Image 1 (tube, rainbow, N blue to C red):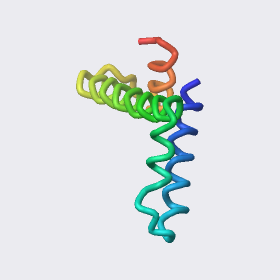
Image 2 (image 1 turned 135 degrees about the vertical axis):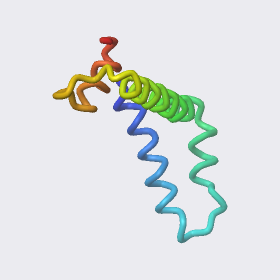
Image 3 (image 1 turned 135 degrees about the horizontal axis):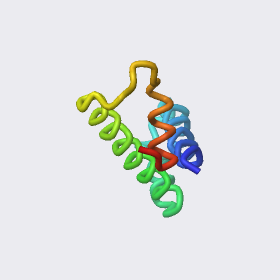
Length: 83
């Protein structure tokens, strides 16, 4: 499910890069954010990403990571609801 929100963000970034040579004043961004569902997906993606970063930094600061534990394992655990 999280990947769906990432896809919406990546699609927006691709549209933005493709529209740069056209100098269209950000029409792709305006069009994307005027679609409520897509806009919500992108905002949710950034909110979850910020939450994951906060949780990861907190775990590192509190030395709650095992020596052999990888960052992607911790991130997956956070997304799946494991502590």
